[in-house]
Image 1 (cartoon, rainbow, N blue to C red):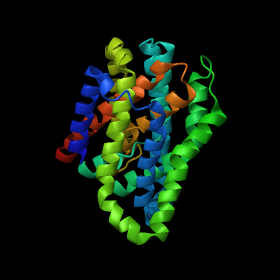
Image 2: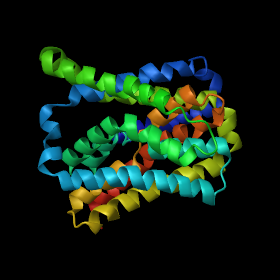
Image 3: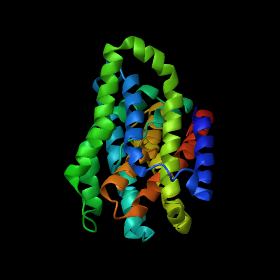
Length: 301
């Protein structure tokens, strides 16, 4: 699956850049419900047992969440300063850094032979924390230069992330037959939806992406790689085993950049370039995640 999504992301991104009219007829407003579909699918896969690691291994979860919401926002802020990114692009990078872990991280963690249960628990917890932490961190890191609507961002995350997940969780709990029929299709549905979201955003911002592709690419790659490395060594620092360090590394490095893109489009429409880093991060982190999984699987760091 990871290999397939990587290939499709590369293909669709290239098409959207070269022939933007192929997808720019789809409104960017569709990104919100499409992201809701992905989150609903995530909710369908969750069971009460998935949250047991939160209670059984609080040290690992707390360490992972601290790494998630400290490393990525701070690295984003530092990169914006070091690279002297324009305000719009800086906002986009910070949005990516302040978002929770991405849904593809669980699959990548599995392929990397990491602690998948820890990965799922971390994704779930960071997603549930996102309505509070994401707007607060964006305000803290970018509030001096732009107007950040904390309440509006909170409501958006609740609507796009929390409600679909809770709905999926409830369907899984009370409509088991439906869930059993749909679950085998979820990887394909999520892959298609994520790829379509990337294609929509890239096509609408093709000119902007091409005009600033180098600086954004540098920022995105450094941000992602820093998250993977620092996340791993954060686990090592507190004495965690290899598989748990692998899980934290991937969780920290792979962000829910679809949410960052949605927030940029919804709350910062006056800064159209703010959606660009999220779109590029979405394309890049699937590729880097696949590479990281191969490295973790074959080597012991």
